[in-house]
Amino acid sequence: MRKSRLTTITYVAIVVLLSSVTTALAVHEDVIVDEIPASDAAFALETVATGFTSPVWAINAPGDNHRLFVVDQVGTITAIKLDPGKNGTVPDRLTVLDVGADGLGLLVPLGAFGPGSFDERGLLGLAFHPDYRKNGLIYTYTSEPASGPADFSTMPAGVDPNHQTVIRQWHVPQPKRADSLVDPGSSRVLLTIDQPQFNHNGGAINFGPDAMLYIAVGDGGAADDQGDGHAAGGNGQDLSDGNVLGKILRIDPMGANSANGEYGIPADNPFVGRQGADEIYAYGFRNPYRFSFDSETGRLIAADVGQNDIEEIDVVVSGGNYGWPVKEGSFLFDMNGSGPGFTTDFSPGVPAGMIDPVAEYDHDEGISVTGGFMYRGNKVKALRDSYVFGDWLGRLFHLTSDGSIAELNPVGPTGLEVRVTGFGQDRRGELYVLGQPGFTPVGTAGVVVKIVDP
Image (cartoon, rainbow, N blue to C red; front, side):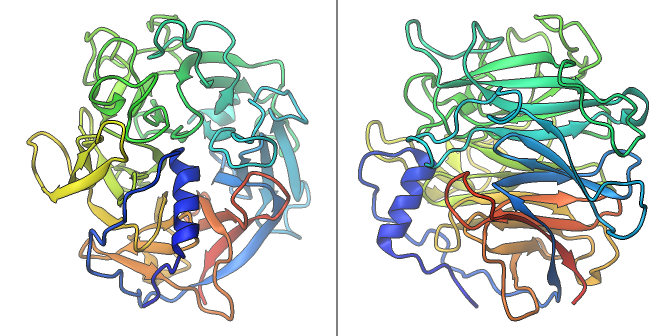
């Protein structure tokens, strides 16, 4: 079984990029001794589209069987045809919206440490309204320059945020037409959130089976959930007025009873009536990077990126507390003041009231989990009914029938030679892996590959 073989220098460099840690890291320990075994599930990878920068998400529009809409971190949403040569009225490739530097210019300049450097900001999420075929409404999650007071902020007086998370609604005229583009003048801002640092943005947005919009928001960045814009004890655990960092939110974009009047507060949200916490669905997350709903059971499954030791998969329920920064995975976490935080005791079920992950792995196996989907397609029967996900370093995994993690290795002369930046799912339930070979959102080497029968 193959394990990640990073040199110490490479390991430290990547962790510094992902966590913005500027002090020396503590020596990594092998927290989970057992290695991830290889799966016996046979599959292959088939290239579907190339030429992206850093694709992070891909979904179909309701009622659209022929296209996949790919979200690129640099600001574009591109529709790609899944069956070239058929359905002649459907363009092979169509950019339906560009909010980046070459388009509407809504995003912060990418490159947190200067042009061409690493960044976790950008266009991070896309969701189609369940009634899209009738109303033409889509929603985006963007990282934008701070342009006034946000709806939610944890920033201390006199300290500016790094940027703002903005959830926007857009309109597509004639959504049943394959050549229809997003109306660039149709944008309506639903809500804004001050982000203390550039990283840990979460960024996924999805409509649940209840037709409510769910929004994943990270803890605000830096490391250990500490620093400017972080509450004492961490944003992940803070339910005080206006702190939505480290949470998954749930709103009704068609309503108007929120504080800003731009969206609705579902009456059955778990913290309705608690000042400033009406929107919160679940909490205790560090960086919930990609979540999805199981198309058959409706379960919300999220991947939460860990600090220095543990990557986790969570089944998220209303009102659930997923532990961060009291815990990292099933382990107690010590924020360690000005020093690097670290895991301590393995403590499943303790403290009471915190929900442990359904699966986890340590940094001997990877460094940053990328959430995927339950496989409900029919082409790769060996993966049917299992949750498929990955690690940013380029490894693919799935949860087996007993809930354990197994590594997926494609059949063929080459494996996946990119960083796994996201996953996609089409209307038939088939899955796609998104990635790019570098560390930074530059270039055009990003790819979309499909998981297929070997």
